[in-house]
Length: 221
Image (tube, rainbow, N blue to C red; front, side, top):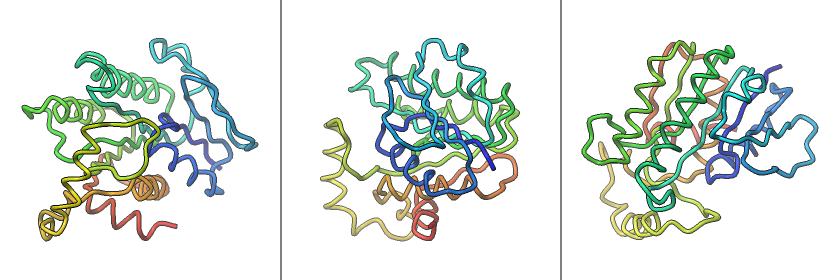
């Protein structure tokens, strides 16, 4: 029996990860870290309300087997480049540092297709830098998922994402062959793939592109 740690349970992908974890019998404890209380009536679920500015204070709660990191925002929602980087890089890497110290065996994280530390696009550059940090930790298994445009209904409105969905709906038929990995993917599919990958032993570091995620998400239970 394992302990699962989940960050981002209230987000688009994270809430599906939470739902699928509840169906997994191999986790005796599912510990969720949120900014505000997470209402539930599940005996296996523990909710730790945290201050992300003081992550070190919660080190004792971050002992577990598998950590699912679904944190992410946009520059528009964050209000500035600095605040965006704080969520998508600072928080994620700090969580990884604590998890590494706590002996977490597997770390799964949602990144983005096109993530590249040398990219001129700020969003993709930050994602790439985050990936590089994780790759160089001593956590035994690191799995990086790079989904394309995430489909699904968010609780908050993201203008850029909605525009992207409209454009995608018009151009989807062109995304075949090598371009297939750029097809939009539903957050539920990403979550299914993420939970399934957590149950498969991997060696070292694994980067899973969007088209591979789609396959894993379809065949996962």
